[in-house]
Length: 222
Image (cartoon, rainbow, N blue to C red; front, side, top):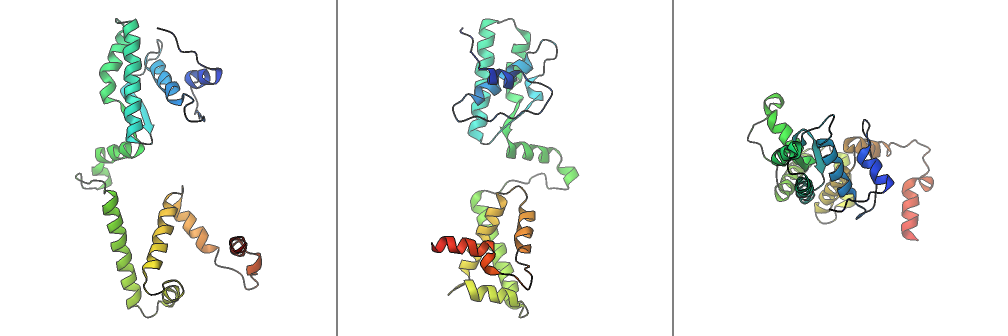
């Protein structure tokens, strides 16, 4: 079988050990092939072989995890075709189904399930689907709004409704949900929300015309 010709950068990604390693490359440049080769070499290293079920291999999607496992299996099988008596390769193929090749969410769920007693969780917990999470958010938001409406001293809340609600308060609820969902895409959502809130605590000599909000509004007007 023809041996793969790796570039110098790919060789470095495959062979570098003992440090954190970041590989940044465009789609279709061979990142997955490089990672598979790196895994194969780690599991078949003559001096210090590592069984594949001792590695954590994380992807973004279930489809990518399945593809990764399939590629690793194919690579091991091809190597065995060339060297059918290779005991370590035989062992890796047998261990492949136990390997931690998964998404970060699946791995975290596995850790939680294995330690539910430490976390004081019901072992029968499950992950809500998208529809359930939408319904839960709406339910919580409705409860909060009901509490605010019942409290006549919530002047800032009533000002918010008066300024942005229109005929119903659905517009304000959607604004809150959009803000929440956007914050969840950031590394530290709570910190970001606090920082953005603090930006509204302006001094008495605050000049709106020189603020970031004025800049955005003027650009939109242009």
